[in-house]
Length: 259
Image (tube, rainbow, N blue to C red; front, side, top):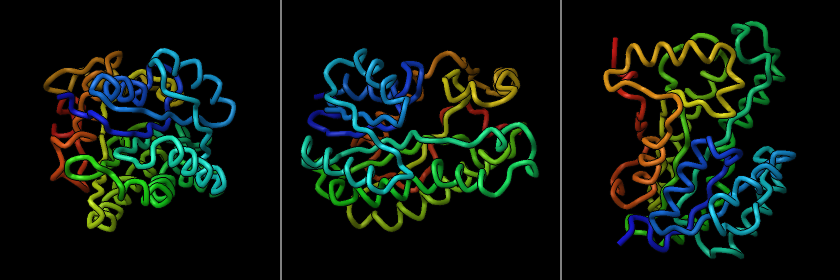
């Protein structure tokens, strides 16, 4: 039997086919899941085109995580389509340009607040809104929430306020895991090494990450290959890790563990 047979999963953050969310969605489909995808704003039309490469995943759900009305409408749409939710992939992050590559003193609070709302608080917004559907999961071990992360325990060059947002995401994930655990909902963060995606292109000096990772990751690292991340995402969504919650799973070639 496939790992995700009859699982119903919402994957956010799919824009282009090089995104980590796309890789997870494709692998989940291969493992027998039914998938719903969400898009945001003008990017929704791109998500629709990209979704065609996955086959029949239904109409794209428009979802601005900073808009409570759209979040509520997305819950209604998923309820109508699936009736329950066995998995939720949070692959959402945004920071205004001032928050990346200019140090910690350039961005005004308004820009930092925007980044916090979209990149960190959005996890609480989504899990809180979809909690009734996640509680109805019929998967072995209950529902699984996977949030895409980038190691928030260290300060990386040029990542600046986005690094703070990821550190907040990791902490928030633990607190949410504690709160929803009695509902048989587990929440984990998937900390991937750098992969050349559209999101990565917004990081100034991304090539520095590439060079450093290749040199220090004991297993090596290919910034053009997100397949290991997709496989780990499927494992977290599946019953194989049904006893794991509040954890950060690193898929980075071992970089995070090196001195």
